[in-house]
Length: 106
Length: 120
Image (cartoon, rainbow over all chains, first blue to last red; front, side, top):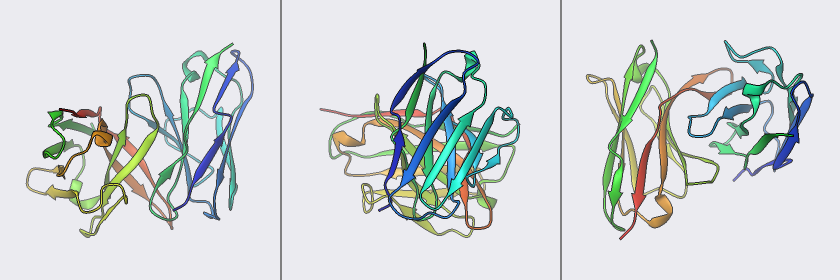
């Protein structure tokens, strides 16, 4: 099984901050990495697919990069509605999610 | 509007069975990859099962042999039959439509989820 490890598990940030979340796969997954946002009590929302492709309707302040085993999600300027939990997910072999990164208000 | 609506969750005893339904609108279930993803209370997301447009099905090791994914094209509905339920199957179950590209896939449309509680 491919394990996905996100860091940090949580972070505190202020509106306007640049936020970077990392995701590491236990083996190479090429670019088959997706990012989701989940607000409390809501279903996840697809932000980025295939490592760097922005899902339709998602603000351009979200971006993704990486390939192989190391990936990042960057929020260029954190907005109030961005406080949520973020998950990475690989689709190279079966599907596996990271444990999540909770972004909280500082 | 593209939408997924799950139903069928509830309280069931260990060893029992439950069938979840996911009614789709705005697109065809049979023409898309469809999955079930679950989330235990206070925990992260776990992929459960997928059915491809061609009909092939795959399962997470944690549910293999106990859960069955299927679809009814005439009703445009996805199902998850869950047998031999265990306490660790307690979770919100989401159905999700998938987008597929050159080697990748992702969950682009999600339902609101249905809660399954396995307890005596």
